[in-house]
Amino acid sequence: MKLTALATFASLAVLTAPSLASVQTYPSERGQVRVTEIAGDLSNPWALAFLPDGSMLVTERTGALLRIDAQGAKSAPLKGVPKVHAQGQGGLLDVALSPDFANDRLVYLGFAEAGDGASGTAVGRGRLNAAADGLEDFTVIFRQQPKLSRGQHYGVRLVFDRAGDLFIALGDNNERPAAQDLDKLQGKLVRIRPDGSIPPDNPFVKQADANDAIWSYGHRNQQGAALHPQTGVLWTHEHGPRGGDEINLPEAGKNYGWPIATHGINYSGLPIPEAKGKTIDGMEAPHHVWEQSPGISGMAFYPGDAAGAWQGNLFIGALATRELIRLELDGDRITHEERLLDGMNARIRDVRTGPDGHLYLLTDAREGQLLRVELQP
Image 1 (cartoon, rainbow, N blue to C red):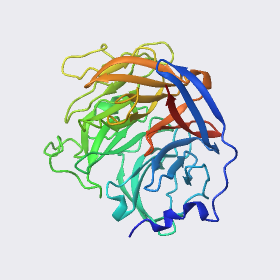
Image 2 (cartoon, rainbow, N blue to C red):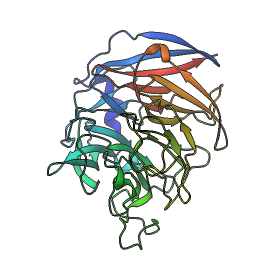
Image 3 (spheres, one colour):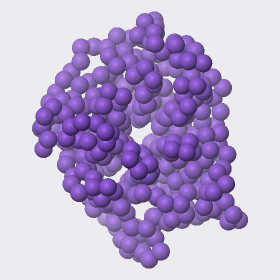
Image 4 (cartoon, rainbow, N blue to C red):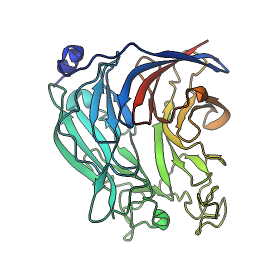
């Protein structure tokens, strides 16, 4: 079934018209950066995904999934979205479209799910209906087990690789030792098939005391993931504690150290109890690390085939330092960093590249914004 309903998106009665767009400019090393507010009054927006017609699905952590068109018109909350555990850092989190969305219309959601006395991350999928106002037959295909979170460190980012498998970047639920336990899904990057089944070549499939879904482990709280547009390699990033935010290129079966290896300390100022050093033999060192935490969230590669000075750059949002981080690359090597939009003073939760070649940001606030970012040389 084709997305004919989306072609008439702007005419649907449920849409609310946007207010007059606010436009600001900010300096950068490469020219002026133009920031346009597409939509406002979003309730702690967390993630966005572009539909084929250029409109967007946007999650609000409080539990709503919205459609927003390129002019900023917002739909009513879509029907058929699962009940979420919207407490602490939990709620409705990441959203991704099926690689075959034009034919199967499947939308994948990552969210916090309540359990007996604790909660954890879950991922499910539903079919966007013909009216594009709801999800049909929503089914949970993955659950983080056991449920250990008391409201913290859910992750979660969803990325399909070129083979069509789904990577799910998870948090440790603030239960540090669990990130090293292969029978638990805290602090793991997992890989599953689109229907939730396990690829037979996952690294721990034949290990009796390990969960078959695990791809890599020893992660803290992963809130960014993206495929490199040229190599197809998955890049992820995660929050350190107080210091030690890091980027990784996770490989099958590898241990990325947390909490035994870390560049950070506890928020109290005391050492992490389990930590033995910044790097440990047999564990993977970060591909890139910030000794002082920007509080990173969201990640997008600027297209390598795009024109302009940002070609091939990597962009990451910063919650703590309220910036957009721009990283220049030489292959996989990070060669330069620039901090952008610090004058905007906004917590940047998600970063995506749109079909128009511009960057799109979500700001994390009770009255959050959807922003379009353009470089003007």
